[in-house]
Image (cartoon, rainbow, N blue to C red; front, top):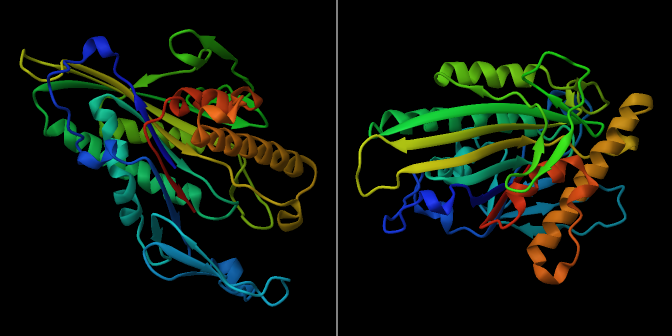
Length: 328
């Protein structure tokens, strides 16, 4: 799922100058796009002789074929804006969100989500997308000598409704959420590092991922037990006077959501069961928020404050110009 909202203050933009997105013009044209990535059976599923229930018919349609033990026996088809089959590489999936990611270089806030059930490959996909976005961002910087760029990174995880700084080595620190009249919800004392190059940025991203909570379940030996948000704040200024926009500031968020799960499938109990409850509740709140936003003013109250995940992402979701989505 990807979201774009205005990032650069209006006072900093020269309205007479047309703005083109580095990834192409479509980043501002999309409204709601839903894409699905199907993965092949993993080794555990192959050993269990599991059968593939989903089939990719074409670039836009998948069919669910119920197993014999289910009450519903008729296949059901679903249509999406784009379907990536099991043989598709992550490069192909990234191409579907590239325009949105690179729009942050032109002052447009962007958020890319990976949403789906546990063990569906969200973290694998997001790591690939993040890596390729970093490559393209620095390629753009190299090819834009007329502008000075600064990239800052912060990383956090939401684990059992506690917010942890992934760039801070203090493991027991639960960060508070504060309401800022201009910035919206901010995370108090969240560390933000300035990247001095692409390699340094990759190192900082790796630090964030290494500190994330993972645990073993019946479906996944290294299941992500928290929501991870890596935020890049990209600033650029014009080196010399020209007709171009003088200054851009925008955030690019990479959100790897913990997977929805059923206790009957994961065989969870104790701490794992409690984690699963928090994960499912926050995902349910996110689903409710997005559903209400898609309806508009008729939807009534939008429950951002019911979950720390939606509180932190509220600024990215409110006033969104587009809601492309990919679900795995």
